[in-house]
Amino acid sequence: MSITVSTSVNGDAVEFVCPPEETLLDALRNRLGLTGAKEGCGTGDCGACSVTLNGRLVCSCLVLAAEAEGQEIGTIEGLAQGDKLHPLQQAFIDHAALQCGVCTPGILVAADALLKQNPEPSDEEVRFWLAGNLCRCTGYDKIVRAVQAAAAEMRRA
Amino acid sequence: MRYEKPQTVAEAARLLSAEKGLSRILAGGTDVLVQMKSGLIEPDLIVDIKALPGLRSIVAEAGGFRVGAAVAGAQLAEDRDLKKAWPGVVEAANLIGSTQVQGRCTMAGNLCNASPAADSVPALVAAGATVRIAGPGAARDVAVETIPAGPGKTTLKKGEFVTSIFLPARPARSADAYLRFIPRSEMDIAVAAAAVNLTLDAEGRVTAARVALGAVAPTVLLVEAAAAALIGSKLEEAALEKLSAACSAAAKPIDDKRGSVAYRKDVVGVLAKRAARIAYTRAGGKQ
Ligand SMILES: Cc1cc2nc3c(=O)[nH]c(=O)nc-3n(C[C@H](O)[C@H](O)[C@H](O)COP(=O)(O)OP(=O)(O)OC[C@H]3O[C@@H](n4cnc5c(N)ncnc54)[C@H](O)[C@@H]3O)c2cc1C
Ligand code: FES
Ligand code: FES
Image 1: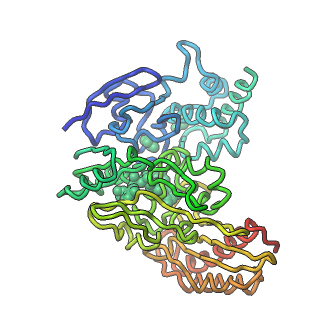
Image 2 (image 1 turned 60 degrees about the vertical axis):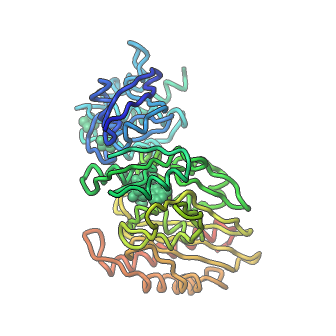
Image 3 (image 1 turned 135 degrees about the vertical axis):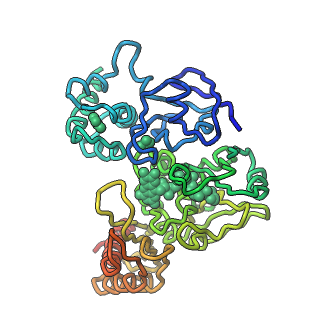
């Protein structure tokens, strides 16, 4: 059996057909060509697949694609404005907050969700918010600094 | 596998009752999808309850709160009135997983997944919460602690599911608290956990108490001897010692790599003491 799903991704209406057991992560990557969200674990532990569902941060590996029907999905592909990087993306480059980059899309989506509801977080708040985003490369320190730099930049703007 | 998203409770009950194979309710999916991915379950039918009327809202009722079964942890955290009345329940639910998991996980799912270490469950039991069950028959209300039957098992019958959790009205000078012990500071499974719910009189004497323990038995434990140790006290050291001893005695934990029996029995008593102190202060008591 397959299901037709009509949903919105980064503000664009999209439609795809998938089996009922398919995850949103697989649908985004394999049916919609949006490969920014990564599968690190597939079980909710690493956050590499982070997207927003009606504005809430979620792991797309723990959402069925069928659940996206009629909802609004936000992915890393929606963060930059055309060629202009989002301040978070620029700050991650400027502060070398990534090495292999596998965790980066998920961390950017998560950090963006944080700054939308808390424009001036403490370092501790950043660390707790990002506790579900694992990074095996950076040791997290540069990530926290980049998020803070972007937050400061966005408060000035 | 079939995926259904019914629009009425009756339709959901009908789908669940009619299914001959394995069916699963889908709330936040943070247990269901993990179990599907790992091959632990292969459901024939998934019934998504998120479109059912009222399941995603928190409404005031009889001085208390009716929390829909599909309300996610993040939504609980945003409800100021709920947090003020039931700080322990909200802090327990908010300990579940990461920010991402909070965007989806529900207390009803936590309860019905029936893990002995489920974080929101001891707090709900200490709160004296009830769950409303829908199914093929008439809806009924039961105490939270009657739902878990053992690891991964509930007392719900075929076709039945939880539609809401009700947190009752609070007398003045009441508060609750929940503490768990985990080896890390985030994203881990409780080794032992304790929830305490108290009401004080104007002099700061405990007039009512409920104490529940998690992760130290196959199901959550409501420990009456622990509550009795607190009632009539102003949380003096002697009462706290009695509380702690009652909790350690009631605990029937397993031995595993995360904690031995002796360790868990000891820690659960310490957690109960600390949770009692927090609840007491929140209720306006001075120690
Ligand atoms: C990374 C990660 C970390 C986690 N950390 C914790 C933690 O710290 N503490 C903790 O306690 N848990 C933790 N969990 C487990 C899980 O998130 C919780 O148990 C959560 O509350 C489940 O809620 P849900 O809505 O996602 O449930 P679902 O996965 O939708 O459902 C769980 C089970 O309950 C059944 N069910 C759901 N709703 C109902 C209903 N209304 N009526 C009848 N049956 C129902 C489902 O069929 C299923 O069997 C974690 C999970 C992940 C992936
Ligand atoms: S792939 Fe979803 S959390 Fe790791
Ligand atoms: S940069 Fe490699 S996992 Fe984070």
